[in-house]
Image 1 (tube, rainbow, N blue to C red):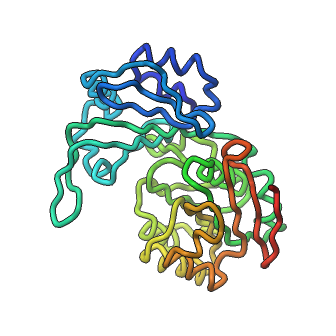
Image 2: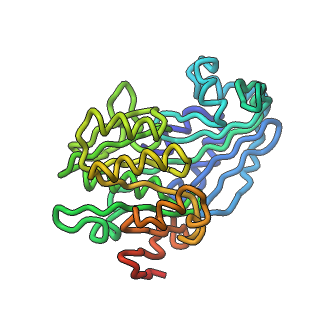
Amino acid sequence: MAISDLKIYLPIRAREAIECANENEIQEIRIMAERNCALVINGKTVDTNVFVSKSELSKIVEAMSRGSLYAMQHSLSNGFFTVRGGHRVGVCGRVTAENGKITHMSEISSLCIRVSKEIKGASDVIMPHIENGDKIYNTLLVSPPGAGKTTVLRDIARNLGNRKKVCVVDERSEIADCRGGVPGNDIGKFTTVLDGAPKAEGMRILLRTMAPDVIITDETGSEMEEEAIEGVINCGVKLITTAHGYSERDVLKKKYLGALIENGVFERIVVLSSRKGPGTVEKIIKDGQVISYA
């Protein structure tokens, strides 16, 4: 996984702008038709002064979709698709809706490419708190968008998957970056992946079929996912997942996720930020005690 996975899709001028920046610090590449593209570097939006025409944007999308945008309409109706390397591409354009739900997107006008990074060791600070010998604790990672929770989650999968039966529900193909059934990222020797599955149904399938020690999934919070999480816990399987928020107080306000926290489902809550770069550990809440790293 590297930003080089993305440069192949871009016009030469945009590639040169990326190469002039510190590639390790680039979090997003933002492309708008008939305007300059921008880079988000350490949380700051930077104008590249590289103009991208509507036709150039169309060529980028065609390359990313491998010439079959129609086949990606299900993902596009959710506002994104994922490309090789586990990079999520957010999309804006003209939508067609039926009964209040988006069914089709065309005339794509903007892309927000979130640069995925595989950083081995990203979870090293956290691991002693979520694993104690053979015991693993149900854990919730909390962070705002772009603050590294998926990067840390991926590294937790790698650490645990080298010695436990870990199963990943990778709804957006961002954690494992499976291509042809083979993970592109190092997610551990014994880790198995259910790729592209909705999280709630994926958790249920893994419980029935894979006898996991641990289930890992990203960005949970719906009512269906709450029910599936309760099923995981009731079966004695451990869960590690993530949610958007700036603190534990933010997730407590979420209807379904807040209920799980109040019921003591999560034995560890890890709050992340990008204060010192994505994946900065701000605090770990364990057994009601707060360990601060600020």
